[in-house]
Length: 541
Image (cartoon, rainbow, N blue to C red; front, side):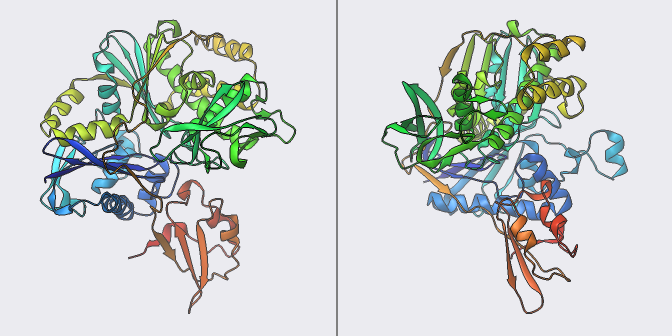
């Protein structure tokens, strides 16, 4: 049997299919529930590469891929083709490419640092070049980026959603921590990428988790609110029906006792449900204990609401900004496409209520994991690589860099005031009017929702779904002058640090997949002796 592997390298984790190349059948699926590189977003990963080392980051990603292959229980020697997809940063790390050109904007900044811009066209290399533990002569197919900052995942999002074939004005978004979005107006596409934050994936939420069995993924109204919990096949099943105010259970569902946490889509649904019942008026939870109660003791805190509404604000500001750059009014937006895990499992109308979708499309499509789908197509038909390159070069794209865009900045400030300070919508729109920006519609158009897939990975294969829970490695250091006071350990928000007495001083280890990386560095700052240096940690082995 000749085998193939398709891999989606996302900001929050990796997904992989094993395929029979004879008939293209998916044999099995393996996923991680975290990313092995410290940090909760793509910029954290980029900073880790620059400050700690791309070699280490590369080894972390490839080691994770090799362990996923091990879960699939296939004959590695029979793998003939592998295809990967992801954003430019993740694919560059996987290939151990120069990455600094993605960190600095402008020719002058790159020249000052001696950095050469990299071409990220389609390419075919051998798996041995990146260290994949399969047949070393197997071909590795890497799809192209559209432009420097618009990656293969954005191409997949546009292609697999059908956006490129549409004639009407439509918007597509990959709902994740690094939310890529594209607005198609005629033959022109406006693209952007919003740092939506980890809450969209259930991270930085007190009882949050990535989409995995046992995660509360939605709430449905059935006289009172019923939790929906993902089962072992990653499908939402009925949990308990309960009172969000007190947690009192009215009816136990089949998933009673099986909830382990809440994923990003569940957070969205819970906040939307709370807003509908006036239990949540961001940033406050109006219950006796200021908690929103879900099943099996899972709760949502006011700090969780603050984290989630940063995401809501960034996403809406991104959509709003693309419309403004294109000169498109909200009422002229015909269709909305939602991709990615969060875009699949979330209730589209609840997501719209909290601002994750514009209020105006006539039709909303939920299309699943387009990045893994495109990689799978490429494994089945490797001649696709030339077509993808041609499509990427033919796209007329205007990329809006939100980080430096004045329109995005203006709207995002109003979003933060709206969600985190309770600014009324009337005042929000009044402020936009002073900047000659269109109003946010006060009413929602009743959209038709078309759920094209039931889960973000529609076909799991005969082997089913396998989950690699422990994805990280140990980063280790021993710092001269360390007294073993353990202040770094106690202050670490993710409990990623351990300290042991060694023959000479103290041995400090950090779990890479738990660590928030260079975006946190509490360990550096809290050290009373000023000797802890995160950037000097080394990977075991």
